[in-house]
Image (cartoon, rainbow, N blue to C red; front, side, top):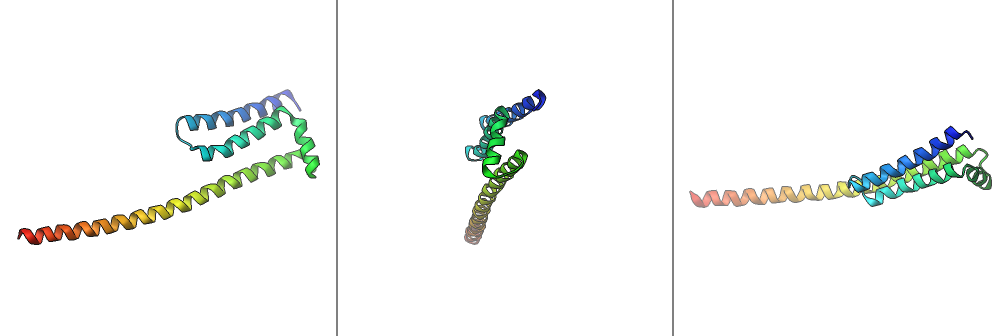
Length: 122
């Protein structure tokens, strides 16, 4: 492994971790979403600092190429992020529908009260 690729791996991992921390600090990302990005960043940092551990883990699992383990882990993390976002989107859609129905009922009620007031004033 060359020094440039070693430093690139460490730099990219630190960039992911730094970006996640900054998004949390600015309140642009919630903690429950940041967990997956911290996990990805820490795994990438560990693999960057100790590249031989990736070789050992891949052979222990039975994967012939360590890069395949990296791809599998990346895809698994992105799958879990997607699954979490889908679940939250479903919850938000349900809440939005409930709020829209409540607003429609309140507008109907307001219109009937306004109509009653108009009838009384005549």
